[in-house]
Image (cartoon, rainbow, N blue to C red; front, side, top):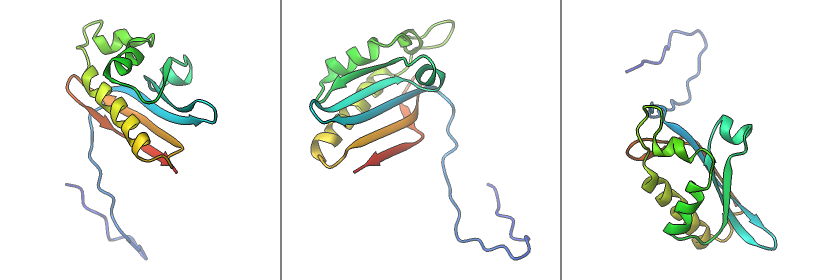
Length: 137
């Protein structure tokens, strides 16, 4: 456990932020935007360099079912990384499917949401951890 150093002259500590120190996994991204004509569209891809430089993402109009979520995941070029390659184990694709479905349900149940950005989340052999998320109403 780390201690706050209170020996700093004139320091005013108003609070302490405690966050989980999570293990890095395969970085992914999920987003949602509302198109004026088509309605809400969901985006999935690998995060980091894959989304920034390679633009390796897939889109689907909401709502989606499990089969459509899986198709979104399979359609990216980096899908092999999720399946496990070069000595790396496969990742928890069912957890990603659940996240995609949950984001879709959140949008359906809350029509005032105009944008969602979950970037990044890490996917592991078992489970996912959301590192940063933003919802705009």
